[in-house]
Image (cartoon, rainbow, N blue to C red; front, side):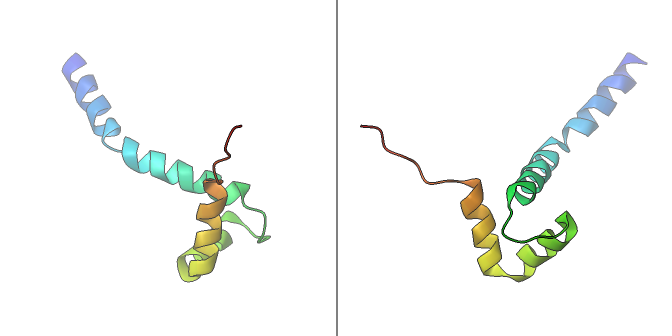
Length: 68
């Protein structure tokens, strides 16, 4: 039985990169407020509108500030 449990944990861990990217994308969509709509609407709009996709990506990675 322990071997079976180890194999199940391994199979689940193969999904980790996909889940991480998915969670990152959902967080970006949640934090973006220029378009009032559901996550589904924002996701579809980002898929169809390149400018909106760039807006999302720009909001996810703010410009670096320089220290003096």
